[in-house]
Picture 1 (cartoon, helix red, strand yellow):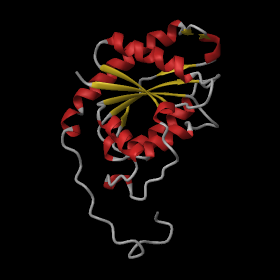
Picture 2: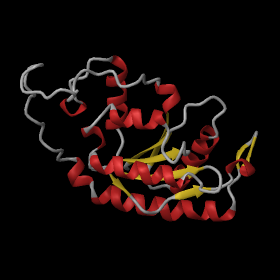
Picture 3: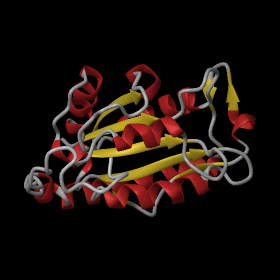
Length: 207
């Protein structure tokens, strides 16, 4: 069974992403097409990108990067649960994505976004451009939750009917892409040639 990681993108205290992520993970488990793991970026505790080498080289020097690489490598597909900050995705999510490279390749991604009237959709559009650079495949189907605080309580998220109805078709399509990309995931791209020594052949600002 393919493995789906449901990634909670927000790390802010009091975030709505935690109950929404739990709801999304439960819905994915009920779907039955995936083995499901809930991944909370707040618990991963990644600092701002602090690796000296380009992530494509996979020459990681930090224990937190090795843990994150192992975590992401174990997934076949992703469901990102994300808010929108100033027309864009949370910095914690972009930072987590940028820590790695080949670990993301040929894995499809879907989104549960949330917010006010825009329901976090501008965040999703920005994320799709980033993920395609890493050879990921963002799918068109998604779940958008507008006016999210109207649907939250101490018991968690109670999705309105249109939101609840969107989950199944999204996961169905995500599973189709997950299966279709299996061969590519099993044949990762070749590693790039080693870079020149520091200070030789490297333009100013390349790091």
